[in-house]
Amino acid sequence: MTMSTLTDLAPLWRTQCPLVPRPTPSSSVFRSFPHGRPSIRCSIAKEESAVSSPYSSGAPGGHSDSVDCVVVGGGISGLCIAQALATKHSSVAPNLIVTEARDRVGGNIITVQRDGYLWEEGPNSFQPSDPMLTMVVDSGLKDDLVLGDPNAPRFVLWDGKLKPVPSKPTDLAFFDLMSIGGKLRAGFGALGIRPPPPGHEESIEEFVRRNLGDEVFERLIEPFCSGVYAGDPSKLSMKAAFGKVWKLEQNGGSIIGGTFKTIQERNKVPKQPRDPRLPKPKGQTVGSLRKGLAMLPDAISTRLGKKVKLSWKLSSIRKLDEGGYSLTYETPQGLVSLQSKSVVMTVPSYIASSLLRPLSAAAADALSKFYYPPVAAVSISYPKEAIRTECLINGELKGFGQLHPRSQGVETLAKYASDLLSRAGLTNCKIVDSPLETNVKLRATDGELLSNATLYRQLVGSLIYLTVTGPDLDYAVHLVCQFMTAPHSVHYAAVLRILRYVKGTFKKQFVVARSSTEAEYRALANITSELLWLRWLLHNMGVSQTSSSLIFCDNRSAIQIAHNDVFHERTKHIKIDCHSVRHHLLQGTLHLCLIASVDQLADVFTKAHPPG
Image (cartoon, rainbow, N blue to C red):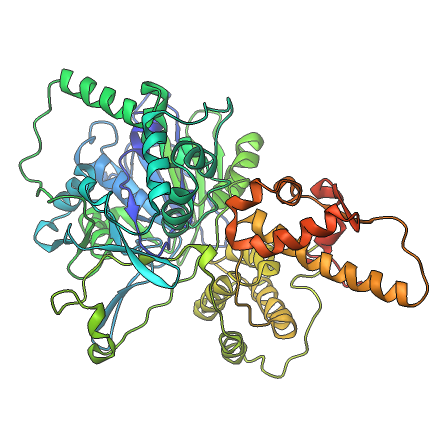
């Protein structure tokens, strides 16, 4: 069985408010097959030293301790892989175990039931594809499956109003989220009347703007990417994120041409009989479970039984000369050493990076480069009488939710930050000038393990929400997010320093940049205003200004917007800033210079550098 076969067993999870950062947890498979049966032996060390047992087909007394595979990670990916191996591929791995560092299974799937309410703090739905439905049925949850109404509208906030998104082809001509010109542009582009592919791997933004136009991207795709992938569509790969749509243009010359070609090729292949056990969803919809999504990992864990080991934190893995791998775990019973012929890792890439470095520095470096966008979830309950009558459909509140494009603005109140400081006991603390100490390097094993990590996780989760309007917090918060599984005292101290920085710098911000380019351009407009004031002040003091003021910017797109009066029209939500900067650029008051990011001195305000 290859790695791709294993990873394909994990279902695709969807969420209207994204709570699963992208990229998805890495799934790595390590296999080694010397002569003899794949096996594992386990021994518990008494003096905090791990003792490895040699390969053996059984333990003393005739009881077999041998397994064929260790699945590292008890999230949904690891559990689905384990269940598939146990039920459909038992000849490949008749004996296996699943190890999870936390005291529960499910990973980012977090269902909470309290005070008569039931809500999700992780993903809140899934795509009811046949592989996903198979996993639900195999877990004994068929009767608990809940499918959404395919006719329920989805909404996008635009110009202060919630506008429905077309749910079927017949809606395309009548929905008001896009203008007539935008619809025509999308239609002609889908037919192939658009610029040719650029010859390099396109981002989602590049692909959609080129094929379907600006309105489709800004009003549909951008909020969808933010909502599902929690990422920046200008950086996400189209081929990786929406591979099926990308292939349509590759195979058929256009999106519609590729669609017809795909249908023709599909009709030539005999259709495989569908599993009669599976329910058939009606239309495009999403699914959940009666008591929340946590029912699925809990059910799989129950079926796997003693094969699932909780609170087992993998501290090291090494390859053995005789074949196979040796894994050392920190467990409630002490250090445990395992030997296995095959290992499947379904942990976040930054965790896999540190674990795999002794095996492959190149693989570790590649895994460490994946970025996990910070995401926050807020669950709010409203009484029925608070819902306005005009928001009801046939007397009921219907809909799959709403997406908010970043260009529409987000408001974050300073009270949120003050409540966060109060929760951490830092109301009267001294402030600091930077979120992290100079040249700080946090490691997973630094300091003492926190006996209760609940407060740490709550504070970090709240800080993630603040990064929406505080980009200067991104680097520091991303760093402390890496230790959510087992935080230590040093990591908690870093969180407290971030909060002290927040106390001194946090302000209410009403407009949030929807992309890195917009953020750079707003900063460019701000520095232009500051420069004009300084030039005016110097002029009044008798200091003449005969040359342009130089502004160094490390964002090429922001410079292009300032110079190109056509290009900036595609970015209407920063139009005023465009006029201001471009006017003074043409007057010769300022001059824009491109600078490499590594040479950008302004980064001292957003990186862990000392004040001054």
